Image (cartoon, rainbow, N blue to C red):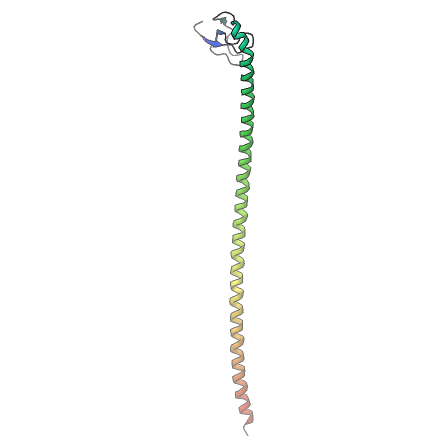
Length: 142
């Protein structure tokens, strides 16, 4: 009995009764000794009447806890998925920004090339006009 500890029964017919049991006992485990001794007598009449109510409430609370755990797991999975989608969207946005920058740079280069080409065209026109007037004068001389 030195290695035993006081436990309480949660079974329907002995609910609330205390007993000595092995210190190493765990549910679904065979790594304990089989020592067992009731510490008190049978459950009183009032205890027997309230036992089903307490067990039903305990079972209901266990079920609610399991549902809450499942909901928490689902919420965690949804959060993880949302974070992955957010990261993917950020990558897409960043790629779009880079593409927009490249397009803007290209458009700026084209505008610059267009302005330079028009300037060269205007300068050529001016030189042609000046040279044509100069050439006509030379042709008119006897």
